[in-house]
Length: 231
Image (tube, rainbow, N blue to C red; front, side, top):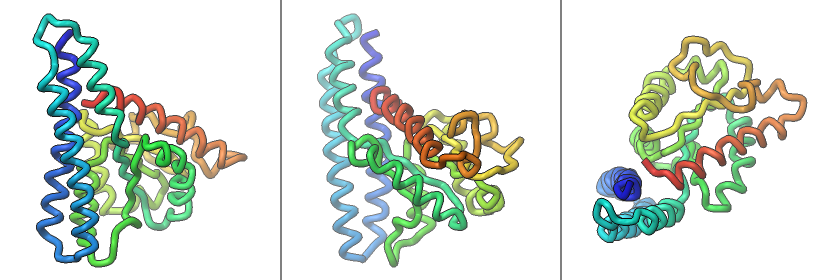
């Protein structure tokens, strides 16, 4: 259908507009010069992406016209920026979280994803507001599952609750990553497809690098799908 490309562009446009709103709110609430500079750079990037997508929808053909050009334009626009990734984890699992971040380096270097976790918070930032803003902007939300993760009240009440809401809305994809043997039966994410393969906990693999590679391959597939099919 001719409207398919326009619908995709509108979905991507909405994602960038939501991120822009959060960044502008953060900018208005900070007096830190270095943070203001960083936020302004991110705002400029959002505005560029929004203008690009608005131009693609404005030039879309009317209903009944050939859809190939507009779909191609949308695919190009959606693939220009990395997919925002939010990592939800317990600080008790810092070493495993860092190992995952290392294995994601190639995806980040290729511009396919932009991963964020709360260790990226700068001194003086309001941590709760920043976490919530990043959680809203993300299109992929990784849950690093361990007993410590399940025991965290903040994770369950704030991060996990909102992550599952966004997953249900279709505005984000939630991916559980099983780090350690954990009882998560009946949890909000228990029916979601988990990584690595067969939901086998990473720490139980004979070769943990192989387990992390399996996780990265799964994340790559999701990221590439989202870049080509923004919703």
